[in-house]
Amino acid sequence: LGELGQRARDVLAANDLGTMVTAAPNLYPHMWSWDAAFVAAGLSTMSVARALQELDYLLAAQWNSGMIPHIVFSDVPGYFPDVERWGTRGASPEGVQSSGICQPPVHATLLRRIVERATAAGGEDGRLAEEFARRTLPRWIDWHAWLRNTRGGDGSGLLTIYHGWESGMDNSPRFDGPYSRVRPGEMEPFVRTDTLKVTDHSQRPSDEEYSRYLWLVQQMADVGFDDARLPKVMAFQVKDVFMSAIFAAANEDLAVLAEQFGHSEEAPQLRQWSQEFRQGVDATVDQGTGLARDRDVLTGEWIGLPTIAGFAPLISTGSQPLLDRQLGIFEGPDWTGDPRLAFPLPASTSTTYEGLKPRQYWRGPVWPVMNWFLAHCLRRRGDEERYRQLREASLAQLMEGHFGEYYEPFTGEPLGSMDQSWTAAVALEWLA
Ligand code: DGY
Image 1 (cartoon, rainbow, N blue to C red):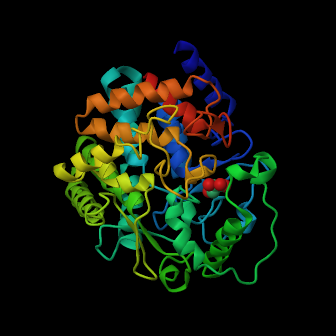
Image 2: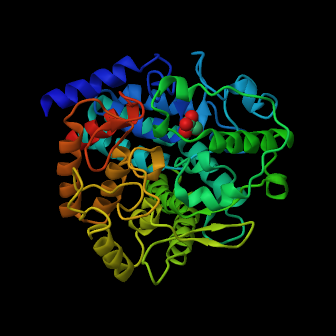
């Protein structure tokens, strides 16, 4: 385990450009919003100062609206779509090079983790963490207010996404229905760079998927990324239940930080949002399957596929009977109780799902970052036992030492990008 920790620290150091830790060395040479939050937590096990610098760098790219963009570009060339293709210049603040969409708001949850560990240790680290929290809380609150008001303003307790990339689970079968109705129009030609780097193309989204992804980028750029116009023009609009659960948890964590660090007047609002989104998530649960569902805003259809997003209430802490039922499913034969699994960890779709593609991105592989996040949320409500079980299985999975972006569920083979920063970061969290 000592060696695993050292390797993980080496990965983060090697991916560190000084200004940012890139999400991965080749495939993702920039900062991704939710990756950065996990990376900061991992960095904080080595240096609290460096971890906070990472979050500061992300915050420096926050748009005037409050949105935190999903990519902050470095100067490293070779990633597509780059800032030019995004067409965000003019919409983003002066000097910021970013994409024009968001990603799941895990930041407050990870920030609370960093701050609690640093303040418990005391000394200079504790002082730095407290200063950071006091100074940046208004910015994180702006981010949450933007999400609540522009993406969840209908009071449904569910956030709308306008691109699968916003979910972070790009090609999950959750989005197949909504994407099937996206018909790309006239578009500048493009050459993908991801498939030059991951040469086994079966591990990445397909070209057809990519043309839809790019079409949605163009639709946003055409209206200047104007929040008010997106609902009128976008061909993809989904109530994302997993992102909404993350938001419920993050509001609770932000409220705790606000109370502790000089912004207690904001805490009731944050708690109210937490409650609103917890209820919104619970209300999506299919009584038949016991899983939470997304909803296609444009057709009104529920999306009830057996993906890991179905366990959203484990993140947002749903009602106790619901949690008990979900944990039963989670540990049952379609999920972590499937004896064929290399490790008892949840795959991105159930292992008995007919559409399972065990090597393809969000269509089946196991994602280490998800396992840590789920375990962390379970532990927050006192479930030390499940945290311990997931930790043991995760460390056993990661011992092979490549820090894959994702893993084949039945063989444990690392897939996608190797030396993925957030995988190294969660290894450090497991070991902390
Ligand atoms: C990618 O490049 O695959 C990312 O997931 C998009 O944000």
